[in-house]
Image (cartoon, rainbow, N blue to C red; front, top):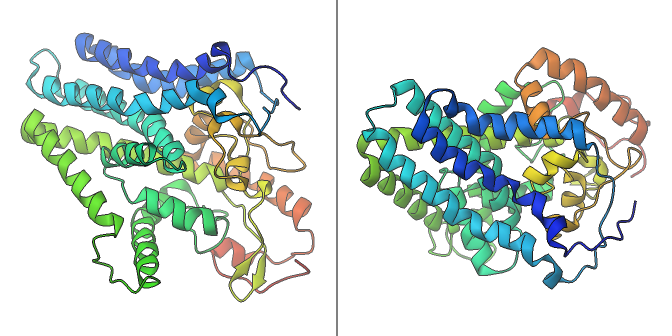
Length: 380
């Protein structure tokens, strides 16, 4: 459905700024402890899912030819996030280890909550920023990823995932019947090695060795090392441990979302290692209004893969005959993914229905299910 309202209106942009609510919650949690340490996870995982139930679905699509200047407020949100997140994290690293009022469990949960913030919002904003052309935005993406020790995500996402999504060459496309816990253990090393191989191959095409200074991994390692030193300088060894808890939580949150976004969806193999072009049907779509506010339209993932250079306010949603639909927004789907029997019972029938709808000529899915290059079946 076409959206004729003014996307440049501050009222249209304002709901996306609700993500900033996590910042005061972090300071309230540090000040009061107790159940307040659960405030950030409840805000990100529960509140917006409840708002989905109230606000429903947003099936409207903005005009894709909207001028860049009309998107200033949306861009501003992604530009200001890194200093806000860094300030919050640094204050927490300095304050929490030395605080005598909080017990150890409260301190751990504070940094788990910080990881929910930096994973749900920070990595998501870095994803938006890394797809843009300006050096400032790409640097902010690098800084956000370094703050969770996952800098290689940029290389893996841009040079592997977007090229090979829905194929065995993409580590973060979850296989049919693969539960999240197996996926997580598999994807942590595979995505790192995949990203490094992609950069090494890129340098080889320019007749340069992997250790050439232009390899972005040098920048990744330097920024991550600086973040570790900063954590130690602010909080000592305890601060460094808490920083690692925060980073692990953020990475876990990212890969949980990656698992949901493409579970069981595959592109047709055309032979000779070639696949059909990535289409909206190769990503799960979720038009749930409130969680798309929090996640800056990440759930319109079908369009993001179809048109990766679109800024988040212009991403389109698709009807069921063009893109597979998730029953709930990402927070609820992520929670479901943590319970494999529940996930498989809910999602496997949807994958099978998707296969019948888009690839009725393919009768043997064993190779696709196992993540192997299948023999080409039927006409492309």
